[in-house]
Image 1 (spheres, rainbow, N blue to C red):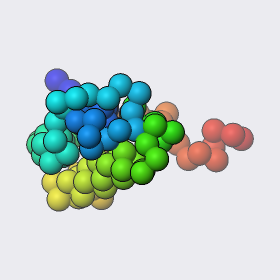
Image 2: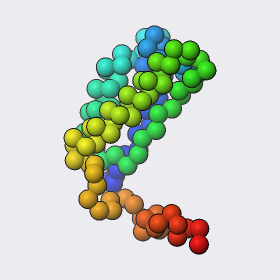
Image 3: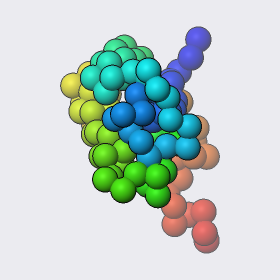
Image 4: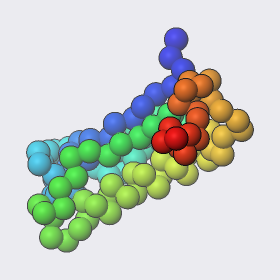
Length: 109
């Protein structure tokens, strides 16, 4: 089985009319509400251990709406993690190994 899922959200899955600031615009891509609904279904039904939003390229978007959409993806994900009870965490999750749980200061001593 899988302990958790790492979500990699590629912003260019959304139609280019909504997110022009990407290296690979996708005409006919998903509407923002469709992409956010799919993200909600994933986040609420699996244990999530991480998220990244990729293919955001601000130089290609003078209006900044692509960065706003990326921010919305992160904020919605955090909200769904709270609603689904995944945040705040109660103790160390099983998928975090003991060596990874050390304090940052310990690694540099």
